[in-house]
Image 1 (cartoon, rainbow, N blue to C red):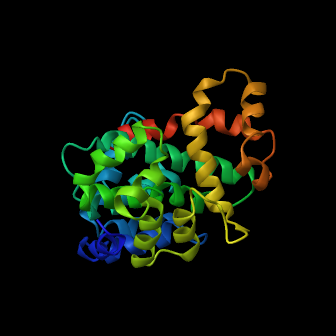
Image 2 (cartoon, rainbow, N blue to C red; image 1 turned 30 degrees about the vertical axis):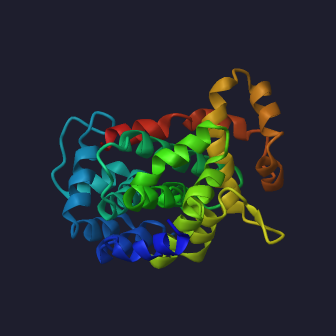
Image 3 (tube, rainbow, N blue to C red; image 1 turned 60 degrees about the vertical axis):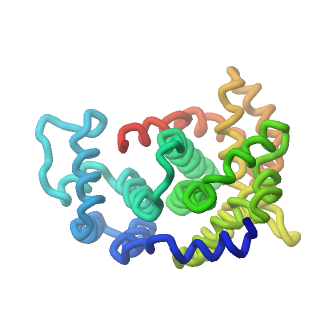
Length: 274
């Protein structure tokens, strides 16, 4: 399939509902108040139901169940609500083949979002923006699974033969999931910084410039794959110091503790929202 053909298929995808688009902007605003967010959520039945379900789950539950969106939002706090809003937006826009393991997909997505936020906090960058970038970083993968599912086996064969995923996608599709994701993010009118982070997540250094948000996504993905191999703080730090993104970003050594605090929690969150 030619890349131009795949990009054209973006237009066939359902558009994100206006209320959800507004919610994404609202939960990422520094000035947003919980009562404003609750009022907006009440206009979307799907997100309202998920907010209530999560707020009454064992993880967040108290002695008394809550029955209103406003109470639920206050109980959850901004972070989990942001997670629900962004994930609901993506879930509503894609109809993926039943054979695709979407549980694994969402667990990975939530994990990268959580790790990205931790890295951003260590850099005193906007953790909300980094979390959202993590939630959106796999947009291109969703697009491929939706519009080019019949090509996945061929892509996987190249990967099994040792080719990186992006190279395998380029060979079969003529475009990568990162490029597609960046294109789709622009189509959905997401901020330019988020679109660029998605587009350059596998090559944070581009056109002789470095995208910090793309660098965070790249490092978060590496951490997700490799962190379990290391036991001691020293071994984790040694590995980090070998990563280009760690050095360019200028992360402090204390980031090891930040990562240890959150590793695995994104996957647990995804399981609760199933």
